[in-house]
Length: 211
Image 1 (cartoon, rainbow, N blue to C red):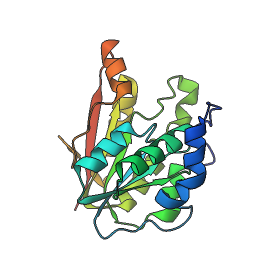
Image 2 (cartoon, rainbow, N blue to C red):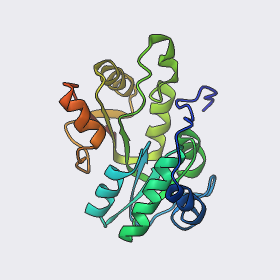
Image 3 (cartoon, rainbow, N blue to C red):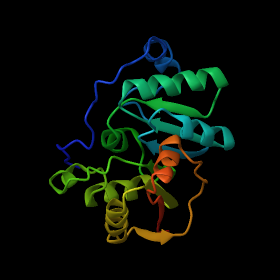
Image 4 (cartoon, rainbow, N blue to C red):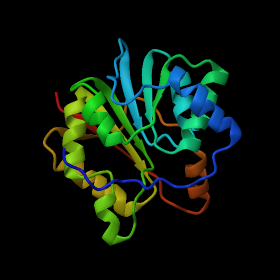
């Protein structure tokens, strides 16, 4: 998959001393280095763009029978999630700090994912920036390769245009069929709660890999 255009920009956000210590000391413990293979004997769920990690951690805590891998590029978010994992002694959650498409291409075996979570990806709202959106036809094909038969892509967004676009892209791919729910319920995020107060419509979308 040739994708020279990145769907993210590395922001120069402030990394706290605690987050910096976590990146140095805890990423080797709870992380997976690119391009090592992601393996699990349990059902495996990959989350793209875990942010500060609150939702990711809550889902992992609620489902100890499942292994989770959070993919995030921004240092403060990775450091925050690592600290949470260490503090709460979470055994079924690991972190990869790298571009998600390259992680899927090189670290994830075909047919190995029970689900892929994509919660509130950057919508790149200006039309001239739509080419930067993570969800593209080539991305849908890549996800289809990595999901097991019956595996679910669960996306969430508060941007109606992006929701319609995501639905169109995945339904135009013959590997997928629309579903009413995913494998795992998604807890409300702080970002989502703020959006709801502002009247933003939250939409969850579910697409199952055909058997």
